[in-house]
Image (cartoon, rainbow, N blue to C red):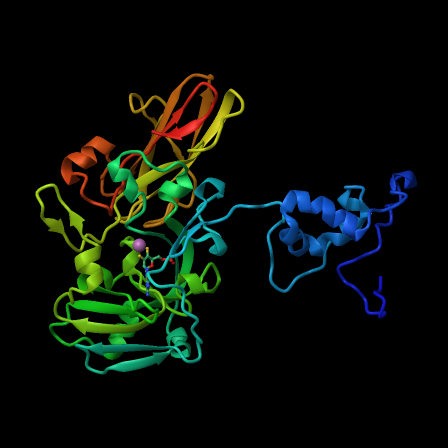
Length: 429
Ligand SMILES: Nc1nc2c(c(=O)[nH]1)N[C@H]1C(S)=C(S)[C@@H](COP(=O)(O)O)O[C@H]1N2
Ligand SMILES: [Mo]
């Protein structure tokens, strides 16, 4: 097909030629026009979205028969897209967005749906100009380009990140509506980079180097101090996520990843590591990321994300439409290591059954669990609890509050309850 200037129009194709054994009469006499098609599509996808999302599939649409075997499909693309029928999206606020956990399968979060938390926006950084400075208590202060960092031996690991503020509003009681709204500040990616220990051994630590300040090159210039003896074995300087360079939102072109630690330690847009003798007591580790205890003291440097789990289906805001078989599905994780076991209750914690864990079960990584259930149409309260390889068991809300009080905002990992009523509606409770 050509337009009026005679140029070929790759997105608009002839209606399909029927296959040999298909009756010719099924071919529409008058295929709907592109305009008519878009009008129809508009009701499904919205005006602006219809043009963008469906443009590659116009050949199909013009065919009008609804039979995808009767017309050649969309052409190959340089950078892929999802089906225009799929609508899962992040729940955004200006400086954060939440992963739609209820819509995901397995353990990997698609990069485009990884949660985001930035303290002052996402910077635009030219990787060719980006540098990492390593200085302080080192024998040789060094300035690295990205190309130099990529030359070092690489390592890839599937690891979750969780913001320590995830589910923080639940300290005051059940507040959020959906699993995305309550627990969506956690995601899992395969991260690739160079070990922190590799880079630090190039610089050479001098005696007395016990902590490390990490700094980002965003408008917040976010910083955290980290204890070297805890992070040296595992921390990575990452330049890739799920097989491609980091997304800008995840710290392009370089981020720190401290597996199992609270998300804010994973400094994005990383530009500086300073080796020091003791923590620098920056704004983020004094006014911000501390936990106020019932006696008025504040716990500081509570880095580890304790074991947690949540049922993602059925979950808040959803409705069970039929009685009978339901696969209860969820995610469990621990910043201390592997998930050992997940137990699920359908009666508000009176009885517990052991859930199936889907392989792979990796340390400091989301783990998918499932349980067969028959819903009889009655009321139910769904809960899950994670037990990690250290033997730690995710606490009930009252047990957590007994120890921590309700002054805290960060590090809320209590058991989530989903109430189901006789109509099948699922609510936080
Ligand atoms: N430079 C910089 N690094 C940062 C932040 C930031 O605002 N600036 N936010 C932190 C917080 S609070 C979290 S929870 C994680 C979120 O990582 P993500 O946006 O890739 O999910 O990044 C951390 N690293
Ligand atoms: Mo965070």
